[in-house]
Image (cartoon, rainbow, N blue to C red):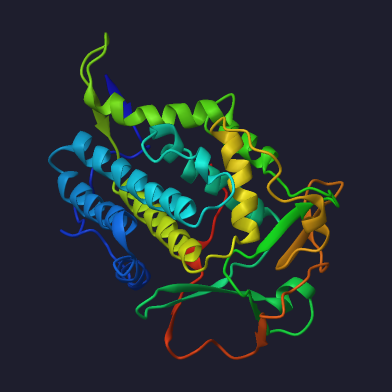
Length: 329
């Protein structure tokens, strides 16, 4: 039984001996190591599995991919535990021991990222305060959003304290169309079937079937993609943990995510909160030709700082590119 993960197979001949690790990956890892308890150790485990996956690829591709998948699941576990630790409504439905619950995280985030990319919303500028208590900041380009003054940025009081709604709907958007589109692009009938297959991939790497023993071939880009997913999950974990406040977009995404894993919860953001949210409100309107228009009807909390200058000198800027969410083919 042979499984091909990509169109070009095997590790590159001129690959570096160690996993490519850029500055922004190092900043995220350093910050994650300052978290506490099992969450910190899950992220440490994720980074360790990534490096071992890279080393193993030329000599044992099956175990290399197994470790790369495990790295992503460990990082997803950290995010799930962070949501539970902060007692987000609906987090009681999450089980960090269930493979489907962990395997669903990255496909869900891909779907959310696809929507944000379709709207034309510019990538946010990120910084991490690497002090004793890591904190993530997100600055949105007001000039790009409003079409007015360039170089003015709104820093949300907390990184996910805003909400997204579509086409003047009263309720928060649940990303149904993007989830179905993602499933279809990967040849699956539904997002739940996609999640089931993702969760089952590790087992397919380990056990024989009627067709034979498993054999897998893939190129190094698969591990690099897992590296960037772990990085993304580490940032999200830091952002959730840095405040006890329940951030609106995190609540919105958690409600939609629960539906993906078959755990239906009541509306976590009531209509009243939609009309007067305490945070940044994005309204996106779909045009007749299928494109999306970002409107300027948003509210900002009193804690938002607007400035043409960058953030405090203690913060370390991270390039926007590694945290963009391009459409997932």
